[in-house]
Image 1: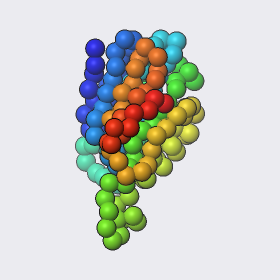
Image 2 (image 1 turned 120 degrees about the vertical axis):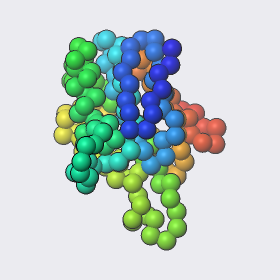
Image 3 (image 1 turned 90 degrees about the horizontal axis):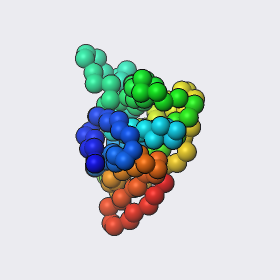
Length: 159
Protein backbone atom coordinates (compact mmCIF):
# COMPACT_ATOMS: atom_id res chain seq x y z
CA UNK A 1 0.00 0.00 0.00
CA UNK A 2 1.18 3.53 -0.76
CA UNK A 3 0.19 6.77 0.95
CA UNK A 4 0.71 10.00 -0.97
CA UNK A 5 1.68 13.21 0.77
CA UNK A 6 0.77 16.50 -0.88
CA UNK A 7 2.42 19.88 -0.48
CA UNK A 8 2.08 21.23 3.08
CA UNK A 9 0.84 17.85 4.27
CA UNK A 10 1.99 14.76 6.16
CA UNK A 11 1.01 11.12 6.52
CA UNK A 12 1.75 8.45 9.13
CA UNK A 13 1.93 4.75 8.36
CA UNK A 14 3.31 1.46 9.58
CA UNK A 15 4.86 -1.54 7.86
CA UNK A 16 4.41 -2.51 5.04
CA UNK A 17 3.15 0.91 3.90
CA UNK A 18 5.26 3.14 1.66
CA UNK A 19 4.78 6.88 2.06
CA UNK A 20 5.65 9.03 -0.96
CA UNK A 21 5.81 12.70 -1.83
CA UNK A 22 6.38 14.00 -5.34
CA UNK A 23 7.65 17.30 -6.63
CA UNK A 24 10.16 18.30 -3.97
CA UNK A 25 11.79 21.34 -5.55
CA UNK A 26 12.54 24.06 -3.02
CA UNK A 27 10.23 22.21 -0.62
CA UNK A 28 11.78 19.79 1.87
CA UNK A 29 10.53 16.32 2.71
CA UNK A 30 11.28 15.14 6.23
CA UNK A 31 10.84 11.48 7.12
CA UNK A 32 10.59 10.10 10.63
CA UNK A 33 11.03 6.40 11.41
CA UNK A 34 10.61 4.48 14.65
CA UNK A 35 12.38 1.14 14.04
CA UNK A 36 10.92 -0.69 17.05
CA UNK A 37 7.35 -0.07 15.86
CA UNK A 38 8.13 0.06 12.12
CA UNK A 39 6.17 3.30 12.20
CA UNK A 40 6.97 6.22 9.96
CA UNK A 41 5.82 9.62 8.84
CA UNK A 42 6.59 11.88 5.92
CA UNK A 43 6.15 15.66 6.02
CA UNK A 44 6.25 17.91 2.92
CA UNK A 45 7.36 21.38 4.07
CA UNK A 46 6.82 24.36 1.80
CA UNK A 47 8.28 27.28 3.80
CA UNK A 48 10.73 27.65 6.68
CA UNK A 49 9.11 30.02 9.16
CA UNK A 50 5.48 30.48 10.18
CA UNK A 51 6.25 33.64 12.17
CA UNK A 52 6.48 35.61 8.91
CA UNK A 53 2.74 35.13 8.35
CA UNK A 54 -0.45 35.97 10.22
CA UNK A 55 -3.92 34.52 10.37
CA UNK A 56 -4.95 30.88 10.47
CA UNK A 57 -2.00 28.86 9.24
CA UNK A 58 -1.61 25.23 8.28
CA UNK A 59 1.23 24.00 10.55
CA UNK A 60 2.33 21.34 8.05
CA UNK A 61 3.31 24.08 5.62
CA UNK A 62 6.23 25.30 7.75
CA UNK A 63 9.38 23.70 9.16
CA UNK A 64 9.09 25.42 12.55
CA UNK A 65 5.56 24.11 13.18
CA UNK A 66 5.33 21.00 10.99
CA UNK A 67 8.21 19.03 12.49
CA UNK A 68 6.96 19.35 16.11
CA UNK A 69 3.42 18.49 14.96
CA UNK A 70 4.51 15.24 13.30
CA UNK A 71 6.67 14.24 16.27
CA UNK A 72 3.67 14.74 18.60
CA UNK A 73 1.49 12.60 16.31
CA UNK A 74 4.11 9.83 16.26
CA UNK A 75 4.39 9.95 20.06
CA UNK A 76 0.60 9.51 20.29
CA UNK A 77 1.12 6.26 18.34
CA UNK A 78 3.72 5.05 20.85
CA UNK A 79 6.92 6.27 19.19
CA UNK A 80 9.80 7.39 21.37
CA UNK A 81 11.28 10.69 20.27
CA UNK A 82 14.75 9.43 21.22
CA UNK A 83 14.36 6.49 18.81
CA UNK A 84 13.23 8.46 15.77
CA UNK A 85 15.49 8.38 12.73
CA UNK A 86 15.03 11.55 10.70
CA UNK A 87 15.96 12.00 7.04
CA UNK A 88 15.67 15.10 4.89
CA UNK A 89 15.31 15.45 1.11
CA UNK A 90 14.85 18.43 -1.22
CA UNK A 91 15.53 22.11 -0.78
CA UNK A 92 16.74 22.65 -4.33
CA UNK A 93 17.43 26.06 -5.85
CA UNK A 94 14.64 26.05 -8.44
CA UNK A 95 14.82 29.70 -9.52
CA UNK A 96 17.60 31.26 -11.56
CA UNK A 97 18.45 34.68 -12.84
CA UNK A 98 19.71 37.94 -11.35
CA UNK A 99 19.15 38.10 -7.60
CA UNK A 100 17.61 34.64 -7.38
CA UNK A 101 20.42 33.30 -5.21
CA UNK A 102 19.92 35.87 -2.49
CA UNK A 103 16.23 36.73 -2.72
CA UNK A 104 14.49 33.52 -3.69
CA UNK A 105 16.60 30.82 -2.10
CA UNK A 106 13.68 29.26 -0.30
CA UNK A 107 15.25 25.81 -0.64
CA UNK A 108 18.35 26.74 1.36
CA UNK A 109 16.23 28.54 3.97
CA UNK A 110 14.00 25.45 4.28
CA UNK A 111 17.06 23.22 4.77
CA UNK A 112 18.54 25.52 7.43
CA UNK A 113 15.29 25.80 9.39
CA UNK A 114 14.68 22.04 9.27
CA UNK A 115 18.17 21.41 10.63
CA UNK A 116 17.62 23.98 13.41
CA UNK A 117 14.28 22.52 14.48
CA UNK A 118 15.56 18.94 14.32
CA UNK A 119 18.58 19.88 16.48
CA UNK A 120 16.49 21.95 18.91
CA UNK A 121 14.14 19.00 19.43
CA UNK A 122 17.04 16.61 20.05
CA UNK A 123 16.16 14.44 17.05
CA UNK A 124 18.70 12.33 15.14
CA UNK A 125 19.21 13.48 11.55
CA UNK A 126 20.70 10.30 10.10
CA UNK A 127 20.74 11.10 6.37
CA UNK A 128 19.95 13.81 3.88
CA UNK A 129 19.92 14.49 0.16
CA UNK A 130 19.45 18.25 -0.14
CA UNK A 131 20.30 21.26 -2.27
CA UNK A 132 21.27 21.25 -5.91
CA UNK A 133 18.88 22.38 -8.62
CA UNK A 134 16.80 19.31 -9.48
CA UNK A 135 13.41 18.16 -8.26
CA UNK A 136 13.06 14.96 -6.27
CA UNK A 137 10.56 12.30 -5.26
CA UNK A 138 10.91 10.81 -1.77
CA UNK A 139 9.62 7.39 -0.72
CA UNK A 140 9.75 6.13 2.89
CA UNK A 141 9.55 2.35 3.28
CA UNK A 142 8.05 1.73 6.72
CA UNK A 143 9.21 -1.90 6.67
CA UNK A 144 12.88 -0.86 6.69
CA UNK A 145 13.13 2.89 7.29
CA UNK A 146 14.94 3.26 3.96
CA UNK A 147 14.20 6.36 1.93
CA UNK A 148 14.41 6.11 -1.84
CA UNK A 149 15.19 9.40 -3.58
CA UNK A 150 14.39 9.75 -7.26
CA UNK A 151 16.06 12.77 -8.82
CA UNK A 152 15.02 14.19 -12.17
CA UNK A 153 17.40 12.72 -14.74
CA UNK A 154 16.85 9.05 -13.79
CA UNK A 155 19.05 9.10 -10.70
CA UNK A 156 17.86 6.84 -7.87
CA UNK A 157 19.52 6.50 -4.47
CA UNK A 158 18.62 5.00 -1.12
CA UNK A 159 19.48 6.89 2.04
